Length: 175
Image (cartoon, rainbow, N blue to C red):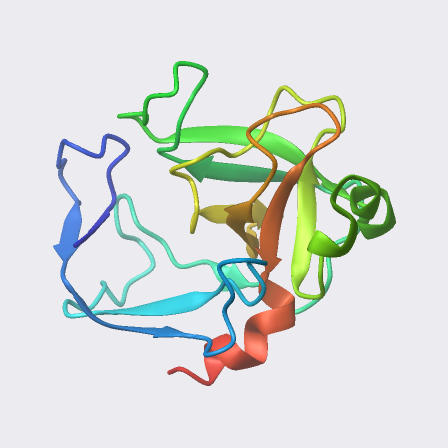
């Protein structure tokens, strides 16, 4: 079940849309061991409003180019917080895109093509367990998908995201 248009995952408000998932497409090469090719597309049984003036839901542009290191972005989700409990309310954090070569110092060969890093080397702000699959948005474009990391908000270990522009052709071919 997919719930859209509400900030509280347990409360539906005016404009909330609930849909069952009719199917999911995922890459045949996904590896749980390495998190390589961590991308999928859900197809909903209920269509979304065609107008772009819906109260609480709007389409997002999928990024078709790489994002510059230092770009400021937002990650959101209902994942764990400091209390290790999943959040009831949708949370958002500002994060910065980190240069691949810098991120590779932390993650070594675990950081592969199709992944990007965002967060802060000082730690303190990050996505966390329960946020996986959530959006990393930069300049109103979907740039990344929350994938994995070393714990949450740990110094020296920013979050790892699936790079949307790297998989754009694959995503668009699922339509």
